[in-house]
Length: 234
Image (cartoon, rainbow, N blue to C red):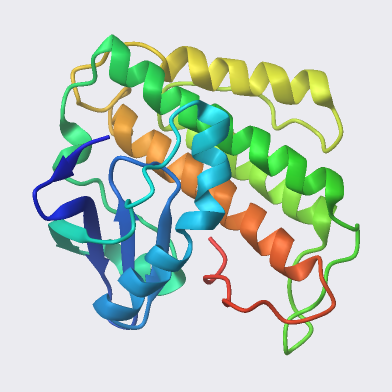
């Protein structure tokens, strides 16, 4: 993991109403808040919830990873993405070259995120607790949403496949294998296809979406309200 003398490297994507904080060396560990301070506090609070993803990837979080953050990038969010709870900006750090070792680390974390999501799905009830106004997808609809987003994200890195159906394990495995084949290799830091995404951003965006919905499913799989409100749906 890359740490500066000040702490764990974090980016802030600033919208008009919300700020998105992402731990740059830990794809998927992203949270938003109404201010920079709130976003960072929520990011720190989610370290223990992100830890299983890192552990499944074989790159366990250091015990002090959330004790001190170093803001290494602060950018304006394009088109209001941050206000809707989505990290929508390709950062300067996302455009750094990726060598074979780093590609392997990034895709290991992505695999960890998928494994964690699958485990959450397995233990979640089909009907999830609704929000204060009765909104929110139930379990299988949320899985369908994640699979659909994945097929859309895949096109940003030059990969195309039909959206797998919920419960079609073979098709889901094939889709993930296609994503990993595109990402688990060195790259220059530029987009993996014209007008597409660089590898670092692709992994960060995909892993965020997976973990965000896994946490939402965990929170809404109980009758009681969660202690930490999930971010707006991406």
